[in-house]
Length: 114
Image 1 (cartoon, rainbow, N blue to C red):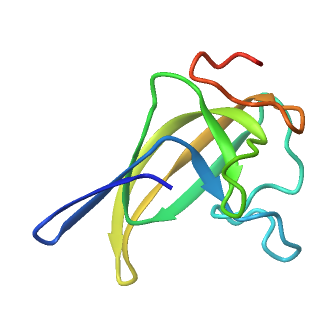
Image 2: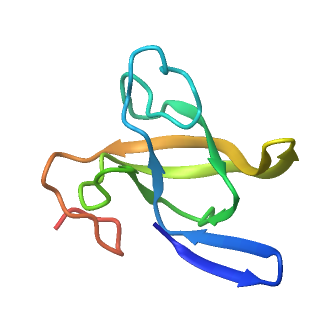
């Protein structure tokens, strides 16, 4: 989920949320999956395919790839970087969980519960 910009062979995506795969046994700790347990103030790594940009001056919602409408937490992206290898271009970094969001709570632009 994001805004895609494509110019010639450059593809760039602006993301307003951090969307990760749901926790899966055997995948715990892999940076493209949610951690097995979400805890406030915890810092985790993420890895996304492609060149992406995230808001780093304030919090954004953490969601699963399957359900962008139900944010799990409010996070802040720290240390976003881009890299390239034989598999392609990647965006990696770390995110800090600022607060967990109760199920059903809407996340609004002011980052306050509705």
